[in-house]
Image (cartoon, rainbow, N blue to C red; front, side):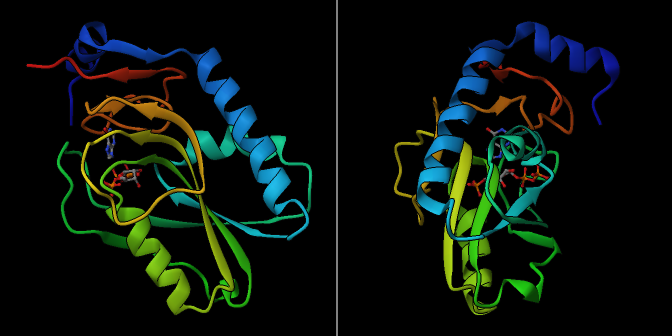
Length: 182
Ligand SMILES: O=P(O)(O)OC[C@H]1O[C@H](OP(=O)(O)OP(=O)(O)O)[C@H](O)[C@@H]1O
Ligand code: HPA
């Protein structure tokens, strides 16, 4: 865990990538796109804990149509900055069977997390699966999946804020920052 001083030092040295106003505008646009595409489908929204917590909390009140809410918990970065094998902490519930499902996540980086979640949902018999991400990192490398709804594009840097953590800290920030490059 970072010490309190280390957490503040990381933030002081970081670069602002998107302001809270830019994040809010992107979420409002994504909400309109989701409404246009899924507003009549009574979907199950599946939030990927813990990173999607801020995106989910800001998006849901902008969706004025019938939906159900559930969550999964999968992690492959832990407190580090390099992805490892995906660890399932809470699997999708069987109630996704036959349903239109919209998966919400904070970031599409290498795409391995969402690809594994989509595989699991299809295995459980979801009828259609869509994905909405607050951010997508432009890694310059091919990804196993493409998101249906994307809020903001990110540079190929380690970022934090708006649900994304740096060594476990700063998910709570309303802006998005890039970690100082060494
Ligand atoms: O596209 P990928 O390279 O697979 O990375 C994206 C995933 O990484 C983060 O989760 P993390 O493993 O850090 O768990 P967390 O949500 O608990 O922070 C993020 O919330 C995404 O789910
Ligand atoms: O750049 C990132 N920041 C925080 N969490 C992440 N999970 C995947 N990529 C990132």
